[in-house]
Length: 255
Ligand SMILES: *Cc1c(COP(=O)(O)O)cnc(C)c1O
Image (cartoon, rainbow, N blue to C red; front, side):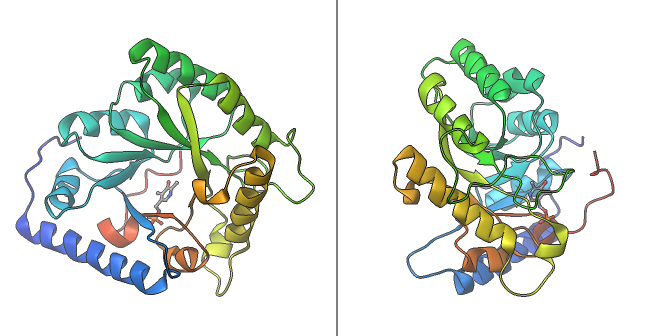
């Protein structure tokens, strides 16, 4: 990774312009009273791109390789709010816990990882509470990770509810602050309402019912470059946009 934080002013201006455009589209799509967050997904992009957007006032960035996020977090300003959006192997819990400015881990989907994170946090800083989203596999595709969506029939032993209850009762240094979905490529490139977004909204409603909390306390992380405006119309609290801001990524991505 090129560790220089110096950027070409023209590249900086272009990135800032892209963020401005995306923010405009979010503002135009958002339901009254909501203020969805824009997370710039900077995976594979150089730290200098992130510094450029930081200098333009942007603070929320997302990564999906833990090693890369750890390196970038070390180089870049400490008030960046990092979102981890990739799959975290449980043997990397310590590495994640070593990054002080993780805003939220967006992809928690197992008890095993929750327990590892709880242990890692207890060792590194017993007073820290790490926010997490639980990842939901709304499209049911085998290749996608995440827990089964909740429905009106779901009770406390449904896997998503069970994990949320386990965290509430046994992981005092983790806090579930929302749900996240990636969704299917087809649905994100189709017109009209997106069934993945509907399933995430439904899952939130039923999780709130089962936990006995207000659903307004749970974020929905949904929407990427192809469909963030639609996601915002359907109630997204946090959109994850990469390509529209940084341009196309080289093909390293399919892990
Ligand atoms: C890469 C990635 C994104 C951003 O995708 P774009 O289509 O480039 O906006 C969003 N969410 C996750 C989980 C990702 O891995």
